[in-house]
Length: 198
Image 1 (cartoon, rainbow, N blue to C red):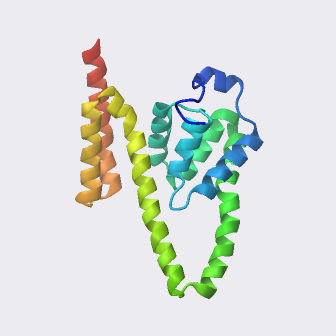
Image 2 (cartoon, rainbow, N blue to C red; image 1 turned 90 degrees about the vertical axis):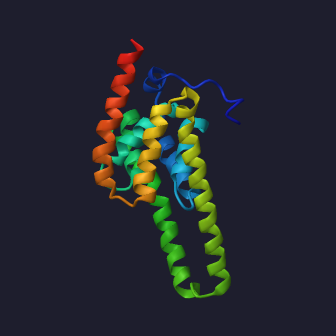
């Protein structure tokens, strides 16, 4: 089912009234993680926003942004926050177990195989191709996460985003220092926009 033909996204209140079961959360995050060669973010966004419609694009962006400020991998934080939001602590643990359990078993097996055949030239070329695919998937996710800003024509938001990209990606400034400057700036811009809109 494509995004165009899928039913309208339920409002947050409906999801809170009929949240997915723990089993559904486990298998949904297991499917995301097992699909996520090179990164789970692409598949997590697709599953949560487009397939299951558990969040709007804006809610996903806001939750994922929150997860950047928590210690640990962002996608792991997202599974805990998202699962806890829908099913409490048990939901967070179910999503967490689904995200990390099956891939851990798979990667352990692949690591054993790589230990025996890692120097085979054909395998090294295959892994190089897989890394290119991962970069493409990540670029796709970034573009999709930008779409709410583009649709709203949020020029200031896009400028803040580009400034953060330039600081981290081009100038190689440390992430914590950039966030310490970018977060107050982003909050000030949002507050000013809300005041201006009144």
